[in-house]
Amino acid sequence: MFLHTGNGGAVNGGAINGRGLRHRKLPHKQLVAFAADAVSGETQVELSQTQWCSVFGVSPAAMRAELKARAATRSEQASKLHRT
Image (tube, rainbow, N blue to C red; front, side, top):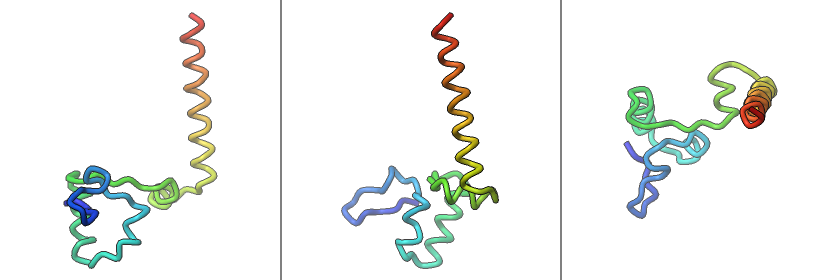
């Protein structure tokens, strides 16, 4: 199922953006259809960092710290590769 802009084009290439979904004020039946599309893998769902935190029950600060640590590790690994 695609979110349509009204001008014939699909939004995000058919992906559902979690940030804008609530603002669309869609009927319950269409929300159920989008949920089924997401679960079945027919449509990709793009959630915000805050929404991902809610899904996993973690704080945004903890997730940001983890992402920062991973970025630092990748940066260190990349610099080691360039030195050798």
